[in-house]
Image 1 (cartoon, rainbow, N blue to C red):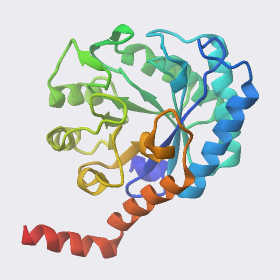
Image 2 (image 1 turned 90 degrees about the vertical axis):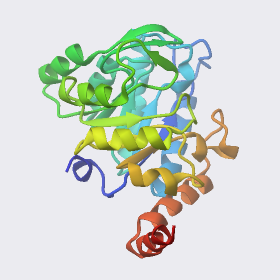
Image 3 (image 1 turned 180 degrees about the horizontal axis):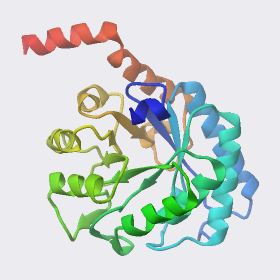
Length: 281
């Protein structure tokens, strides 16, 4: 039900826009216009390529804080998100790295963005930013105070980190849904561009029950038909970029290739051969 409320697809593809360095970032280039222009170009490439949603991240602001980002980052991201929402029909989400869920929720509330991604909603992890604690208590109360219906897509055992609380995937998912009140779950591999294992996806699928499950990293057109049946949707970035390189801009041709592969696999005509192959195995 949630996915149908947000996306016009049974298996939504969410393409990620990695913003160029923002004000106060070590690599900030001094021109917000350049940031906005690049974001608009990538939003157009994703929209024309047929993705079902867009996620905006301050990815190139690394190194990240484990706490609250500078107000200039919030202001810049608000402007970018608003511009993108004005130019594309797809729903737009926000992820303020590394784990500034409050700023993401505030931006979403002010711009009308329907969802945010939170890397550590529950539990405690050791990351390259140090020890990060979950934000569920503060975030869900903040959402209530703001009076917004913004949905929270939460990573479980998030990439680029090691859990210091529960390393058990099923238990972590149950806690994130039942005690953290996440609206959707995201499962990733060990790092950006790394897919989750089939065994993890199978376990996560069972643990999520009716809560939507998204693949959060490592999806490519040569593995999507293997991993997508175990999830309700996919968040994709690296494989949509020129030459598949994370530091490159989004390539419209690669977006079309990825979307076409997913649509071919999920179309009713494609399901019959797939079942026949499975039967022969």
